[in-house]
Length: 178
Ligand code: SF4
Image: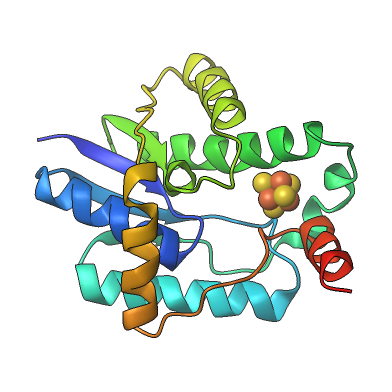
């Protein structure tokens, strides 16, 4: 049986990948490590939804208990697409380290469900991490189930955020809605 460390960006995005992987008999360890989220109450809100998902799906979870945006906020002050590349790499690196700590066979991420994320960049950064830490990355394409997952999240009354996560994406969202 494949033991997989699955980085979870948020609960609504995780619903579909978790269902697919559980149906395939994959032994899942969810990893919630997203210090890119701004502000702190938003991080807490997303973290709580992930705990709800964990109770519902009975997956194992490694959940970073502390809000850590201050440790890397300056690093995020980059132009695009370097900002997202750094953001993906940091989260995937933590996930791969956690995978090794728990004797997982491989790692992946629920970011691969979203048509709004940069798939090519995620894969590029994931393969850098794979090479560096010597643990396989699995490039799932969960995107065909994105709408289904979001509809399910709505049914479950899950919190669904309106912006990616970091302060820049929040500001961009505010500018768009002016
Ligand atoms: S837009 Fe999203 S992926 Fe890009 S840096 Fe911000 S939080 Fe990370």
